[in-house]
Length: 393
Image (cartoon, rainbow, N blue to C red; front, side, top):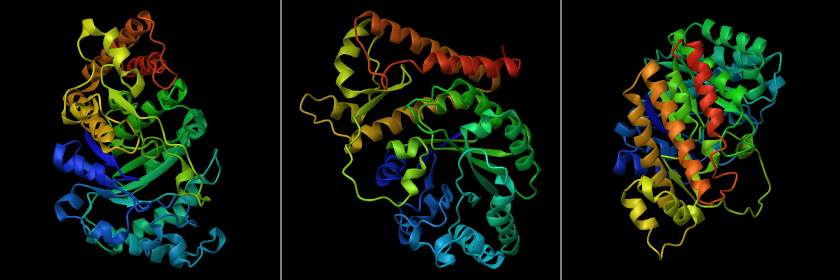
């Protein structure tokens, strides 16, 4: 299991964390935030351990730096319209995009996808005609040597509906020429931690079925539920900085008016709690758990942030570099375990975190809904259900 940085706004923090702190194993490059020249200017060593996400989610919207890529559908077509995106345009865009990925020596060749809502009946045919078949043909024409990975953005409804779930699985496992799936779930992001039990169980099973069919599985846009999902043995787990890289939200790719948006509350990741807590709770949490030792992992960034004079603000790099370092270390510890043993480690860590939250609450600390442990019983139940299906429990 490898750990890749999901790049977005202020992506330099991720690159520096990978290079300077050995946090993670590679990068998921994001053209929405990175000009083509910036990507091509990266060192060959870095490009070889990373891959490029074309981000064709809204093919008619050139937000950010997407316009700098001559293979983005709206650029290829000089104004994208689904009905007018002919076979020749699709093929030309695919050739340009595949050639770009080959020439830059990325780890994988990614076949992009279009974002859709709900459970459209034409999902498979639309993706095949617009991207899958043209890209597979381009890979063959250009003799691509890298593994070919199909990107899929699926909604929570697709995964939770049994018939749709099975149709998706049969479709993707029946595609000839692909080596893996780059799976992104659009679940609406109603809370910072995923608390939808049925979704988590379905996602664990979907990843597991893909793995049983000998496909590489790369997960995208995850928050700390990556810890739970590790028990399905994905090949790549992502870590991200701002919420836009931890929870998939199509709004970041839509054209929007410039708005004054209030910045998020600075948070710090506490590995023993499996939670990112509001920084205002740090001292009371430490006092409530004195008997358990310091819950905050020691590193250079903690030393900076825990100085009395430190001015907490969401735009400070230390918050995110600390998270990259601490969470990637935690995930790496899991990588040495397999199957039942990994499940047992994960479930025990969740139980321990639940116990710590009980201790904290017992000392009168009332955490806000985005800092508490309300997600953990749901995660533990999902882990147990998956373990039962695998005969690990």
